[in-house]
Image (cartoon, rainbow, N blue to C red):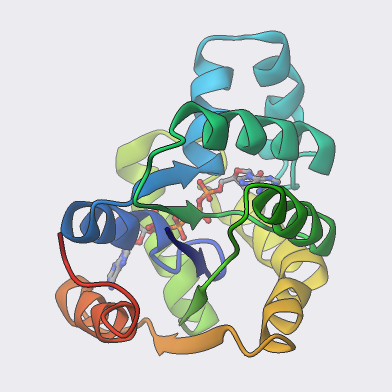
Length: 193
Ligand code: B4P
């Protein structure tokens, strides 16, 4: 089993690149953003709770997200591996994920961190907001999301750096060129399926 975290600030391209990686390497894709938006659209009790945070550009509480991840991993016990997209986003989530995987006799093998200048992030997300209708893609909320990233999510990189698992990837090239850089790193562990 090979487990990968795709890491980076809002709009760095985690979701975009996860699609390519999932197809090429046949990994199971787990996006907490997608899972939460699905709960919101179905207006489940979890979704109603999560929406209050997401609409303000804040992170959803750790216990909500960790529970969701745990059941998703259990759904596909025979997976070739997982790609975690947008998770973990806090040090508490990272520690919970490490424990969860240890319990399943596996671990995170690689963390690829997409590096994109802040101006590009804002431009991309404002652009996405025009077409996606996402309530968190307007300039005021985007600024809050980036602030939340620096305060709570950036320390996750240090956590994996301390285990020698973090590799930084230049993320402001085209989608295709960024994918090539990511693939070069993944190929060291796993061949395309
Ligand atoms: P997410 O859904 O994870 O999304 P994101 O950070 O906004 O974007 P991503 O990095 O995936 O960018 P994308 O590829 O779409 O989070 C949304 C919210 O959910 C959070 O704010 C939080 O409230 C909540 N949440 C999620 N996970 C959580 C967790 N673990 N704990 C607590 N709360 C959580 O790309 C963005 C745009 O850029 C797209 O339009 C794309 O087309 C474009 N783009 C991508 N790559 C490009 C490139 N190379 N060049 C030009 N444009 C590019």
